[in-house]
Structure formats: structure tokens, C-alpha cells
Image (cartoon, rainbow over all chains, first blue to last red; front, side, top):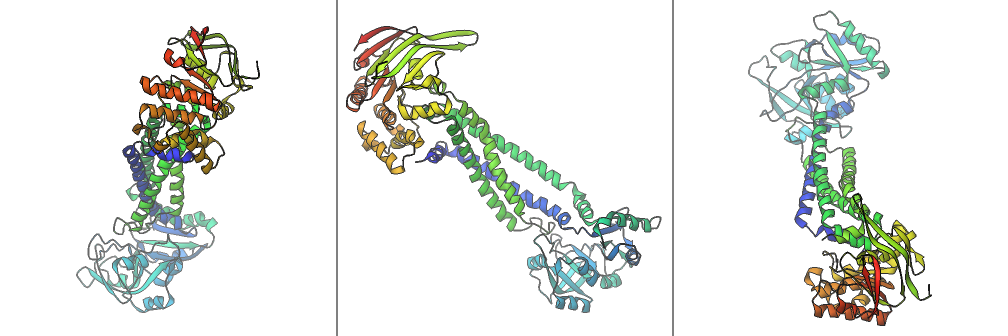
Length: 384
Length: 230
């Protein structure tokens, strides 16, 4: 037996209490991992947003459309390298719960604007040849089992076709991959010209523009210039960085990041109290035994270490299992059925989780450990 | 101090403070204990027997005076040094055994050895030897709750001698035992003194137990009032 043997033996003392404490820590870290993935899902767009990309939308709201003619005006502004547009389609595939972000775009311009979407050249050619062609991200293709050549019916909720009914049928001509794990591979992209010619209203309108600037350092200045260009027109604009645009879009339902941080803080504070109380109780019950250890020659530091190690082991066991479980749960996929296109356990958060596990163990054990360290063996041995 | 003196206390005073009140437990107490002696400390409750034992064990510090054991001034030691000294030189036996309930008898006995640099095999050998001396080899794997009071006290004694300390301090070692079992423990302490050369200081209320010692000191109101031959 080494000193660790004493620590391990102590876990057998109140098995149920130890198990419940481990379980409470486990649940906290499952929550931590899962909420970290959700937070990341809301922030990922901001993180991967191009620093050289601006978004131009209607000054009043994103749901107000802009004229397609703005593209040429924008491209003439000094400092703008290229521009393209996209619009919100908002259709349904089979059932409302099958959420897929769908956008009519100009294929070459859009893929040039987003080089992180990797589409094989042959598939791009097919897209350019096929007016009803659509390109989907790998995640969406895998989710619905789509492959190239499939015909996909999408029910319109806003943009009904001129031909009547509300079904648009697209041919899958390509599947794009993401350059990085955080790249959104859930999009359903189809041709704007096909969409514009066949929609029953709103011809010549687009949702927003993307701009690539030649010098990111001049982005603010160019954004101002764009808005000045369309000032006092029927369609005034608001231009911002893509990161700000995505953040504003994600925060329509509130500041999710802050809400999640608040929840996690409350969870960890509660768990700290639970684990701290367990350790304090364990030390109180063992006062006399700790006195014996000191009497036979254990130093204050060794007694402090024993209690801290015990607290850390409880935290590490519960926290590790919790993090592993949350990893598995997150790997099982987006719980919303598509509303969180980028849903994964960020490796950085895993490292933070591991750090929190140790910090929780140290924090929960700190006060009882210091009490144990300061214990006077004579007083401790006198207690019955 | 003679070369044979193991413990020497000079003018030791111990005062406790309870609120604004000062309680003088030991007054100007001087004492020499020769190497190899079996000394019994007797006296009524509150006379300062256990306090004196704690001072000799290095568990507590005198308010005034000197305590020298084996040539070392333990009243001048502190913290880590004092803990280390205790681990090397003193074995403690308690009235209520004070075994760790989650550890087996052999693991309890091994505790003081965890602080040494002995290998696992060496520790096991020392533990087996100590348990054999107290006649409890066959109960090595048992936890305290499955041992009788007498057996638990034997485990406590094995723990006190496992690191081969010269000084064994026993605080009412038979106080929680019936006469017959207590006699067995006293036989063992006597054997440790006579056959293994341990110096033993035993606090007891029991005159019958005190008779087993070489010398009996009587404490009254913090002072050694009588010295009796056992």
C-alpha cells in the first residue's frame, strides 16, 4: 500500500455517497460538453466568417429584399474585389422538422466567395449546365441519404412557383465538402436564375449581398461607402462584417452564448457546493483518524495532500465520464434536426473541461484539506 | 543526565487558555526516564497524565521548560521536523485503539512505514514481524470491525512498534478492555519491555495495570507527588 491506498480505501467508506457525488459531477460535465457544443454551434459562423467578407442587407431588416441591380453598383466601389448575393428560400423537405438552410445563388460567384466549400470541378460544370441543379453540403446529403442524380422536392413556404402548387423540384448535381471541421456543410444551394424566373413574385430581388474587399483593413471604410452609395434610395442598406452579420442573425433568439455561460456557471457553482460539502463531511467524520495519521508522523502537507487528492479523484472520475458521455451524445448529432448545422464538441472546450475537472477537485477539497492540515492531533484524538 | 536516560523533562509547564481563564495543567515538572524502563503514570482525571504523555510524544508543546528525548530537544522542533521525529522514534498506543476502519490489520500496522523509504517487500516484512510479536499474524487481513477489542489493541501495539521505535507511549491501553483481555495486553507490553528493550510510558487509572511497570509516578494537580516502586 502506498499513500494512494489510503485515499482509495476511503472511497469504500460511504459507497453510496461517493457514487452520488461522482454522479452529480458527471451530470455537470455532460451538461458542460453538450452546452459547449450548442454554444459553438451558435458562434461557429462568427468564428469562420471571412475577415475580408462584408454583408450588405436592407437597412431596416434582413427580411426586406434588395434590388439585384445593386450588385453592379457595389462592384464599382473602390476596394470591392467581388460581390454576389443570396436569398432565404425557407422551403420544407417532406416535413417541417427536416430543416435545411436553402439559398438561391449564382454558382460561380458564390463558390468563389466561399472557397471553403470544396466542390469538384466536374460537379460545378454539371451545375452550370443544369438549371434545376442543386448542390448540397456533405452533412445534409448524408443525413437524408441523397446522392448525385436524385430529384429533391422542396415545398415552398414563401416563394411559390409560377407554375402553380408549391413544390420546387431540384436535381442534385453536386455535393460539397468543408475545408475545415467548422465549415457549414448543411447548405442546399440552387441557381438564382432558375429561382428568379420561376417564382410567382419578387422578381429581381435578392436577400443580401456578400462583398469581398481587397484589403480587410479598409473593411469599415468600404462598408460606409456602400451604405452611402444607397443612402436616400428606396432600398437603403446596412453593411457589416460577415462575423457581425452572423452574430446578429444567431442572436435573434437572444444572446445564446451568455445564456449558456450563465447556466454553466450556476451548474458548476452548485456542483462545487455539493462536492465541497461531501469532502467537508468526509473530513469531519474522519477527524480522529486524521489525528492518528498526524500522531504517527504524517506531516501537515501530507494530510492536506491526502484530502486534496481524494477530492480530485472524485472530480476526475465524474468529470472524465461526464465529458466522455457528452462527447458521445454530441457525436450522435444535432438534437434540433438541422437548426444547428455546425454541431461538434470543440477540442478547445474539451481541454477546458479537463482543466475544470481538476479545478473543481481542488476547489471542492481546498477548505476541508486546509482544515485537516491545521488539525491539532491532540484535539483530534480527544474527539469521540 | 545519565547516558542511560532516554527522556528528560526539565521545569516543564503547560498552560491552556479557555477564554480569559488560564488553566495550569503541569507545574515545573521535571522527570527522567531511563532507557529500557517501563514507567506507569497514575493520577486522577485532570491531573495532567495525558498532557504529559502528549508532550513526550511531541504531539503538544510545553508552555515552558525543556523536553529532551534521545538527546534531541523536541520542544525546539516544529512542524515537519517534529512529525518526522515522531515517525522515527515514538510508537503510540491509544485507549480506543484508533485504527482506520477501512484498512485491514496489516494495512493499519503499515501506516507509519509509508513515511519511510522502505520498499514494499521490506514494509511487508516489518509488518509481518510486528504482527507476529503481538500474536496476530493469523488476523492480518481482517478489518478492525471483525476483530475483538483485545485484538484491535494488539494491532494498535503492532503499529506502535513496527518502525522499531525505542519509546512506546500508551494512554490507558487497557481502559476499554475487560480484566482478562487487559492482562494479555499488559503481558505483551511487559514482553516488549523485557524482550525487545522498548522503553514504555503507560498512563493508567488501574493500579493492577500499574503493578506491571518498573516504576509508578503519581501525578496530582500537575505535579509529580509520589514516586512508587511497582
